[in-house]
Image (tube, rainbow, N blue to C red):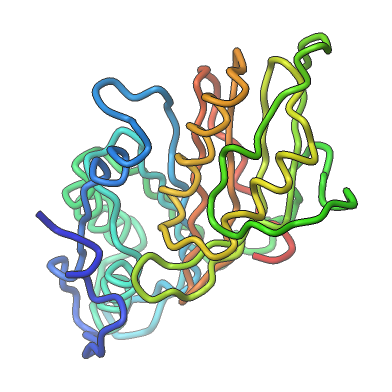
Length: 275
């Protein structure tokens, strides 16, 4: 079984400039899900939205082409793809001649779907579409200005509680203070997060303390979001819950996991100012 420690993370590597699908390093999702009590049928649905800003290949005459790439990995795929291996794989297109952007998208779709164990959606935005890319912050009430004292920097679900005496609400709460660290290298991962739910009001001070408690926690982006989802479900038991995190990019890739227990369209893939 592939583990994060066996991946290219934290290791010196030789960059390859010719197409090589074998560079992709899949890691099964289930190992980390076992840690948070997710076995059998998934208690959520969702998607991991990746954006790639450093994709280039050569046209048949050897002229470089560039595009922004959108990748959507379904949450029920067997594997995640380790991000450094993903970067190495994308780099392998640099000196590869392809007929056009459609040919590049087909290769990406086929290889990533094989690695993930489920169909992956791929969309390439060519330069004539760059001007249409927009910035937008997560909607909802930002809880970051709450005047709280914090002393826990490892995930502390016991901090979470709801205001049981109040009537159920339908609201979205956001924070820009989510930070975790890479599972292998310990490098910081920065994110904004949105909690959308229907149920007893989540105490906002407790939620902010809880989100900040990830600050010294080592885990991949997807795993952090699933941990947050499960902790909120256990502590507050909302009727509906969606957790969406927008992480800042590293090495030309950002990863934006979304988990929800109710059906609906995936969230908009609109970059925040920090992305």
